[in-house]
Image 1 (tube, rainbow, N blue to C red):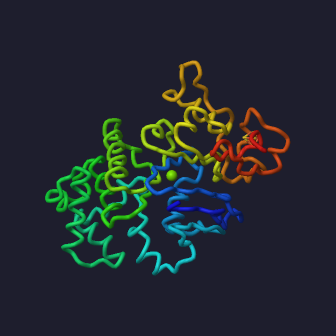
Image 2 (cartoon, rainbow, N blue to C red):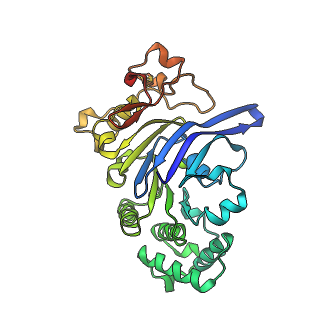
Image 3 (cartoon, protein in one colour):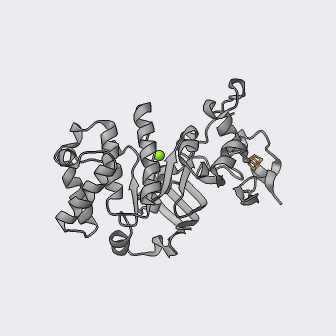
Length: 320
Ligand code: SF4
Ligand code: MG
């Protein structure tokens, strides 16, 4: 794999409440070169925390308690900040952050966003930077000569998203993490962005982690899928398997609650129960309070990762 996350644990320390909220628990994810890995989960499941952990951009009160994130075999979490920033962040691994429409500095022209980003990673040759930036803007179907001199407020939501994607790509990273890149866009613009993401993967060979709360997007974009629930990985597998024949009770519930993925309207069912309260540390399987198949063991012990025909499923129903 290009990226291999092992036993990643992230906490948010809330001093006022004198507790640590576990945002990611024992997360293992492999991302193969050339894949588009869809990471799906409800809000609060740890998706953005995962993205920021890979970029080493988590800020207090969030801390990485333990784990490793290997990129081509190098543990990114073991590097000095200087080494990570000059050799990896944005250079090999970059990100289109959540709500990226709001990442722009309103007082800076688009051109200066590219120059600034390059400079932050030690690249100072202006002509070279602007040449690469122009190529990427053209790739995303924007006119560089025009866009370079505009201020962020002069761009539409879709244009801003294209610029954010160009910014993530212009240093030629091998891996790009896109955090809800189509949220807050109208349906037509959403499709344009999804097609753009696919052409980035196909034509530039960029590996992509595509984060979404909306499982109905997954069949359109992903080659494989990671299902997150309450900071834990529930199921991992090829896209068709996960969508057509979900194994984990949570994945099943997620698919059944999504009209466009169910075979008929009367099969659409909301997920039973309430989403988990992040302040509550659920013992055992995090899905047990909502699971129709719950057994005694589920309430006390965490299921392991069981291999089901090449898929990983964390559920006692698939033990042995
Ligand atoms: Fe349900 Fe138990 Fe499987 Fe969790 S481990 S999903 S509670 S059957
Ligand atoms: Mg998020």
